[in-house]
Amino acid sequence: DADVTQTPRNRITKTGKRIMLECSQTKGHDRMYWYRQDPGLGLRLIYYSFDVKDINKGEISDGYSVSRQAQAKFSLSLESAIPNQTALYFCAVIRQGANTEAFFGQGTRLTVV
Amino acid sequence: GESVGLHLPTLSVQEGDNSIINCAYSNSASDYFIWYKQESGKGPQFIIDIRSNMDKRQGQRVTVLLNKTVKHLSLQIAATQPGDSAVYFCAENISGGTSYGKLTFGQGTILTVHP
Image 1 (spheres, rainbow over the protein chains, first blue to last red):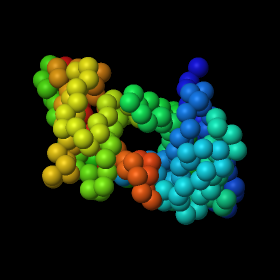
Image 2 (image 1 turned 120 degrees about the horizontal axis):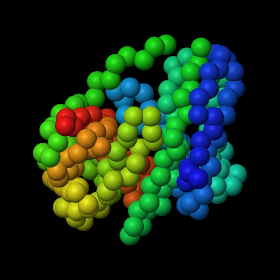
Image 3 (image 1 turned 30 degrees about the vertical axis):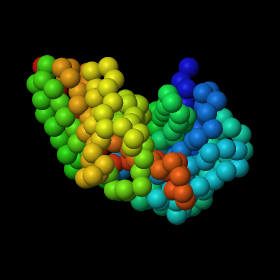
Image 4 (image 1 turned 120 degrees about the vertical axis):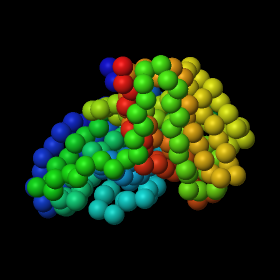
């Protein structure tokens, strides 16, 4: 079983539709992150959370929202999807300390047409 | 729309050679750094980390060097293998202040290992 699970893995949606990407973890770590990956631009941070109901904006939060209602789940929403939100989205779970653990999900490929 | 081609830096090496992947980070307040490996179709995978109070840290076949003076980080892979072929990202983090925990990634480098 994966430590970090993202659903769906692939999604095609129409412009203007609302879509939610889910992330769940079995590691029990507090820190969860949502990143967006575009070719040539690496990973850009959208939102991150250190605890239930804790929400922090990343570099590119406009057009996105998140929810952290439980320690194991961190969801990302696009309220009204637009084509330039077509990208690969990754959820990450990180525990920093003497022995850092960092896990990424397999990614969600989102296409907005 | 259709994605354009990748414009990441590339490094090609022969199997068995040592590889050095470089990263320039942007924030002088960053005090924690991580290297990730991303294979095609997969999420990034943690390789090694280093804190700003260190200049060097070694793992299995990998070594990370940190030069805070010039804000430069490098990942050295010894005896590179075809399975090391991937995109490598450095990430920087700040442990305090308003940007606490805001893990920021660099652009990435494509490593190709030829048998």
